[in-house]
Image (cartoon, rainbow over all chains, first blue to last red; front, side, top):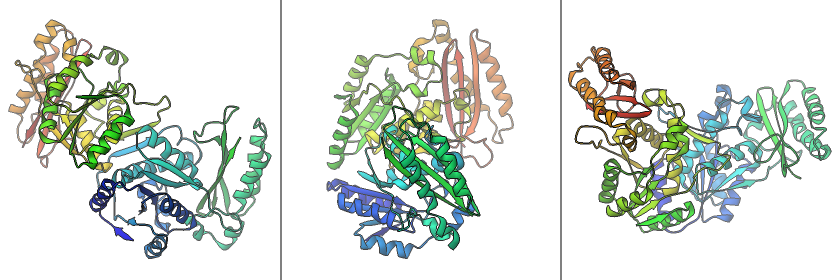
Length: 279
Length: 279
């Protein structure tokens, strides 16, 4: 596996690959790989001629400085894991922003709900860095995890609205044996919180099972889930919500798919999870 | 000259051209060509292997509905003019926005001054459509006119901030014999206003000549220019301003170049002009 740190060097490599007619798959990450990331890489390696993984902690998508500073890093481990999967190139840039960066990509409406409401600027940072990476990597296909469902919805909308010729592939959520969705932030949980962390997914599953076709028991189910989760010491629910997928509107009888999504703080660690339900 | 109306067809053409190693020049326009546009096309035809001109009135950059509706159109004339210059492809799409378009590109600070201040949303519309066109046309070089100096500054910043691998070339302002900068909007002036219209450039030239190295007479010169221009019946100055170029900050002793810029309304027609002064 090749490690490329310079933007211009990556561009030159990609240009050659495209001229040769190779199909390029791109997995954008912030490093500290877990099975969720590896699954995205496996999908790309199996679908595409060349797989490029970016490994860059994007400062502009963090709404809290302490979260950015606590974000785990282990590039040597990442390198070995990607290499073992036959990833072709790891793009590992030092910094992607000029000091007087002024341009931002914002996807409206989609970002006013769920995580967007409690993380001001987060999705603006995500859309902007992904736009930058698309312009450097110039891929045919890009892989995102369903765990960050709203992020995938935003990027899908951005791809369409800004006429990127890129196919977005969503990969399913990878879970621990007890149901907890894999996340780079899981290592920061206390042992007690780690033990209780699967509660979020359990409650989303209950909503998935009990929700009525007319959604008339929606608020009741959400309240019930919140109450159980917040009974755990040191835990606060950020939101539990049901939205149409992928446009994240209030669901109604015209919705074909629902996103049942939740976010909770266990101490300072924020965890998210979701279920996409076909109607 | 080939006329392409479908986005996908243009993509396919460009992909083939790039695989052949052809250098692609791109001139984005809103049609109704004048010598200013033709000059951009000539530069591209002379520099590049293939020249693509887009001809699309972008609705999202108009801050006034009446201005959009009054925008002149003559595609047959445009076609003949571009063909005579050996333009290779005219991209003439019907519509480039989905009904639920939600994604916007905004370049901050640069757009808070000059035309940005009096045309809310204008540069957001410009940056967004240029971003979309770049993603469709995928050019090596793009040509913009100095007449829309702030637009060129915004696009230059966007290219850098979003990592587009595109060189921006600025073409000088083309003028009528009496000094009036060419504009598609000039045809909408009354005969009286047309006669007086060169006053804006005359006043900018006086500022260019009289401005002191420490800029201490800046406000005085601007006031003087405004007074003379607004003495013409039916004419209102939108702004006359001096900024550093191309970052559009308040100029100081560190500035290497100045943008001396003005905008005025003659009746309902808004005209702009500028001079870039090397220090």
